[in-house]
Length: 352
Ligand SMILES: Nc1ncnc2c1ncn2[C@@H]1O[C@H](COP(=O)(O)OP(=O)(O)OP(=O)(O)O)[C@@H](O)[C@H]1O
Ligand SMILES: [Mg+2]
Image (tube, rainbow, N blue to C red):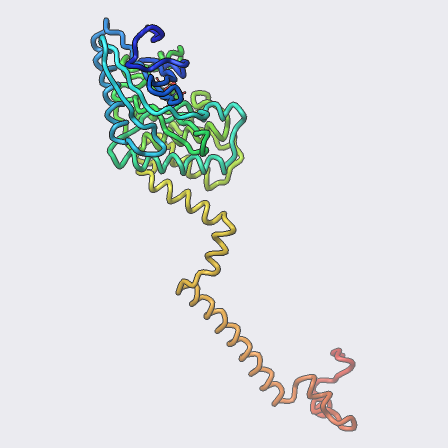
């Protein structure tokens, strides 16, 4: 694959290589105007001796350009800067996001439930916008999410995976390519996507798998699946049943049994944080919701009713003269009514 070191790049200068995918290489570059402005330049370098592959790869580039233009201005997606074509090679310049990939964060060790709930919430909120523009990302994984250093926010990158997914050069991944041009990241792509029919909730699946990887520290291709194709992972992480349920539903083998849209997942995640958060519970207690007021009033009514009942019983017993207090109230020289009736011999309160 041609490297860019000697190619004139419309005034951009290469600082270093950032990463290499199947269809090209991404570089950190500066612009001629300002040496302090950094950009990410993606060079799509297609094998034009293979016309079919070249055509699909060209579509891949055009798709990424179109998507970045559509999503331009979103604070957690790199801004589109420029693109051009030269000698049947393609160049895309985008905002450079300084930070650490989730993949690199994972090298510091597997992550907590709190970390993962925040990760899910943040990426789902980005996906809500992406999906609302009728775009499926198709390649969510820890290599395509950057934690921006300046504000610790997550940024979603690499919108290049299209009708043809990115090339993976490992032996395992080349074995799973069917048909040859449909290449995907093994483990993150759900079955319907590998069969060329990605759904919006294919992104939910990939995000769920990413979350499981962050919790367990295990790469998805190393996780077992059961006879129904469901990923077996719960025994590998210490998390609440609630999060287990959410992640299992995000990663259902059959997309019809998954969450259908990101809002469904967000609702359940928010439910988790509401029930777990002491602050929220406090707010709920102080809430003057009519239902809660009604419940409070009912409790008071029951207590009052009970007290009145007790008082009535005491009054009746008192009137009947059967209360111990009545005995004491008798003049000392007079036997109590009970004693006089001889029905209940008293001896120090004990029944003889
Ligand atoms: N806008 C950006 N800001 C900072 N770094 C970036 C940016 N875009 C890409 N990178 C870096 O370059 C790498 C490759 O870029 P990208 O993911 O877009 O291409 P790719 O060909 O799919 O590569 P990969 O196989 O790693 O996913 C990323 O993993 C990231 O480290
Ligand atoms: Mg990538």
